[in-house]
Length: 114
Image: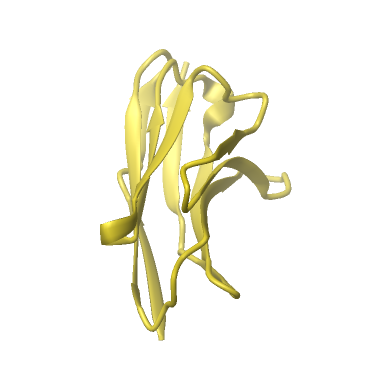
C-alpha cells in the first residue's frame, strides 16, 4: 500500500507565500516523476508543476516565475514553493507520484484572499 500525504495549505493574502510538502511512503518502487496539480471549484484538475528524479522541471505558464518545485529523493518528498500568490491560485492542490503507477494524495486547500 502506498500513502501520499500533502501538507502546508492554508489561507493567505494576495502577494503572500506558501510552501506545500508531499511525502510518499509504503510499497513504492523508485519514484520517477513527482508533481503538483490543482483543481479550482467548477474547473478541471490542471497541472501546476512536475519534477523528474533527475531534477528536470516543468511548469504551467500561469505559475512560471512564481512557483518552484523541488524534491528530496532520499525522503520521497516533493515541495512546492509558491510566491506572489493571486486569488486565481485558489484551489485544492494535489500531489501525484509515479513509479510505473500513479498515486494521488487527498489534496490540500490553498485559499488566496484579495
